[in-house]
Every structure is written in structure tokens, then in C-alpha cells.
Amino acid sequence: MTSRRQFLAGLLATGLVPTPTWADAGSPKYLSAAALPDGSYVLCGIGAAQDVLFQIPLPARGHAAAAHPTQPEAVAFARRPGTFAIVIDCLSGKPKTTMAAPEGRHFYGHGAFSSDGQWLFTTENDYEAGQGCVGVWDVAAGYVRADEFASGGVGPHDIKLLPGTDTIVIANGGIDTHPDSGRTKLNIATMEPNLSYVTNGRLIETVALDPSLHKNSIRHLDVAASGLVAFGMQWQGDTEIAVLAGVHQLGGQIELLTAGSSEMREMRGYVGSIAFAPDGNSVAATSPVGGVVQIYDVETKELTYRIAAADAGGVAAREAGFIITTGYGELGQITDGQLALSKTARLAWDNHIVPVGG
Image 1 (cartoon, one colour):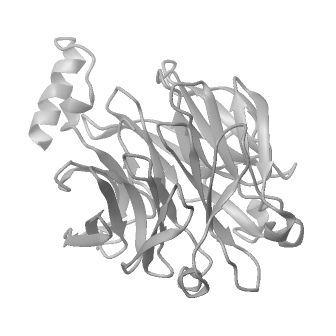
Image 2 (cartoon, rainbow, N blue to C red):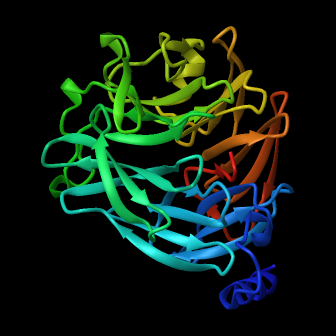
């Protein structure tokens, strides 16, 4: 696959082939960052058969990636708080450019392309103001910074596009940080997480949790074909928490996904990733610190399955169920509450697995 990709990249450079697509890069279904045994880091393309199609070096630990909707390009974000993101040509396996956060900003590890691929949106921290913002980057111009707008809250983390629209949804985690303090959380007592929806740079809706849950940081998102948003949270309080996930439809109210106290306790207050099944009828939430995946029924809002999986991090839709990754180098699939894992040699997967074209 590597030689074929290099051959196509060479033809592209001479102008002898049309604009490449993801098929030219081996038709990966997912992207995920990983660590190698020697301490180096890579971005991997994962095929439909859960095989690793390519490994592209990264200069530091990656967090999440954004896949261009048509071109075989990906943006790999540094683990937050990071000040760089790398645009990678997944056909040649080489970096195209490095995006540097503007002065006074840092990235939060996530980004999303517009549906036409012309723009990339990145969640960022305006750390002197203590407010979140979203950077807008011009893809055709070489990922040049074009604009920014307010995220609608503090500590924006994940960001997604609502299908068939120009509206983006932002998970504002509510936690204020500053580079001078590293990853120290500066405002736990007063944090106010929310979901914000923005169209063409204009905030159109913000929804927040009940005040009793204000220490539940909204972190990660997925969006169903219907536009329903699932969100996973990370509890910052010092008491037990009864809920770590929910769903929301633009224009409606937040609905929480519930489980028993023992099932919630095993999550250890932490959702690492969240995803809808392909039919949108169920939601999976991983907890790498708890070593468990929980699956909820969207209609009843109740837990239907819990599956033990040590250091389970990434999760995404796959066929009738889900694909998951673990920090132990495993790729697995969950179907009807049953988990099948396979070991991937020499790779320790990071927190997220990102669908290509989804």
C-alpha cells in the first residue's frame, strides 16, 4: 500500500492524475493517533477489516484528528493544550503544513471541516480573556487563518457539524485553563459547561445543564444523521455522580442518559469518547479510566449493555454496532452487546477514533 500511495503521489505531482480521493489512500474508514514502543507517535488509517493501512509519523502525541470530507488529507491535533496542528497528505504520507495557533490562543485537540471541505473549524482558548473561541482556517489557501468567533462558553473541546447544514455544535467544557498553569483547572467552583450551536459565526442557541450538574464538564460529541447530538461528560466534583452522558436536539431540551449507581460508579466520573450506532438508536460511551464501555438506548435513555474493556478509549459507528480502540493496542467491535477484540502489534491507541467521511 505504501508503494502504491507513493506512486500515485508522484503522478499527482506531475499533473497526470485528477485530484486524489480517500480511495487513493487505501479507503480508510477511520483515523486514530497511536504511540509506538520506541516512544514515537503516528497517525494511522484503519480499514473496514480493522487493518492498519498506513502509519504517518507525528512530532508529538496526538489527540484527535479531522478528516477532510473528500480529499485524502487529515489534520492531526496535539494533545491539549497544544499550539500546533499538522496537516497531513495521507497519500504521500508527508506533512503539508503546520497550523500554529495565533498568539494568545491554544488548541483543545479537536476540529471539524465544513461539509464542502473549504473551511476547518478549531476549538481554541483565548486564555487571557478566559473565553473559548473557534478558529476558521481557509483550506484552499493552505490552511491560512481566516477568522474566529466566540464558542459560546469557556473551555471548548469537541466540535461537530450538523448533517446537511452549516451549523456546528460545540462542547464548551466550562473549565478555564492558562498556559502559565499547564493543565491546572482554574475555575471548578464556578464552571458552567454548555452546548452551543453556531451558524456562519453567529451563536443561535446555547443549552446548559441543571445547576446541580455544573461541575460535569461537557467534553465529547457525536451527531446522528437526524441531527441529534450525543455528549459525554467528565465529573469535576468530589461526590458521586449519577449521569455522564446525554442527548440534545437543536431547539429542544437536554435529555440525560441514565444508569444504576453501581454502573455509573464504574465509569469513575469519566467519558473518554462517545458515538452513535449507525442507525442512531443507541449510544456508546467509553471510560478508559474505568475500563468499560456503556451502551444506552436512545429512546428509553437507559443503559442496555456494559462491557468490560481495559483502557477503552476511542469509539465510532461500525456496521450494526461500534468499533473501539484501547491503550493496549487492541481494535474491537461491539455487536448486540458482545465485544470481539484483536491485538494490533506495536501500537497503543490514543483517545479517539475518527470516521473518514462521517
